[in-house]
Amino acid sequence: MRFSKFIALVCPNGKDPAEKYSESLDQIRMADDMGFHGIWLSENHFSSKTGLPKFQGEIGITPKPLMFGMKIVENTRQIRVGTAVRNIVFTNPLLVAEEALVFDLLSKGRLDLGVGSGYRPWEFEGFRISPKEAKERFLESLDILDQAMRGEAFSFKGQYYDIPEVSLVPKPYYTQPRPKIFIATGDMEQVRLAARKDYGVMSFSTSSKEHLLNLYNTYREIAEPLGYDVARDRFPVTRQIYIHRDPAVVQEYAERNLPHYQAALGDFKECPPLEELKKLYIIGTPEACVGQLKALRDEMGCTHVILWFNFGWLTHAEVTAQMQLFADEVMPHFTDAKETAGANA
Image (cartoon, rainbow, N blue to C red; front, side):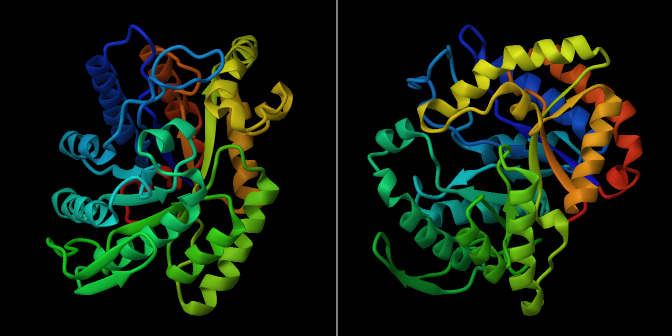
């Protein structure tokens, strides 16, 4: 079972953003040494203008995740760098493709390019793009991105882009025929698209086991006859995690964390009750976390989990303590975790 770490670079009021980047890099070095498979970086824009209830400070300070990604590559040995997600609605997809191709070259193929269309209203407002256009813009941009990253001459004419014949450089160097693409979605239509196009799929942290299993089964039914790789590593599951030896501390965290979950969702999605929310976490003592991860593996075949250790605005010390406990008392129960770290998936 592979374990990756999600990094949102949440920077509350009063926190030095340079210190936040430094702390995150320390955590990533730890993850690399511990045998984590990958790091997944969020992309955020205009986060100081949130309009969210019960929230103070920034949501995220990574408008250009792969700029930080290159710093990660320079400071680690093998851990992969993914985007969760690179928004291809707000940026010309040709620029995203060039960015990915340079990263593929300089990182020696350590990129997993997760893409999405965004969902935060203030980001659409800031870029003067209507949320109603997000789906069609995303599909058009994805088509362009896929063709452009192959390094071959192509042209494109659609509703939003009219591209004359171009051929990007550098060509795909380490990853053929192009850097790896993952779609972040829980939508069945987009899962079918990913299966037809040979993309991976990243799940949302709020998705139930039943929903995720249904999505994967549909993906496999389409992709397998086409000869594409349907390994479950291409279908990572995202989960918030909180691990502590004291059950009372775990419960206190869960109760304290609920307002942050509501803030992250904003006004556009209802937050589940606390006990239901806990079922979507990996949460509890090391023994409990082992059981929950084994249930993900045994009940739905999950072999790759992206863990969000810093959900709830925790301190750097709290996050690193969790990571150490997880590496010492959970990862050894999944013997292939370190053996597969850094492998191309």
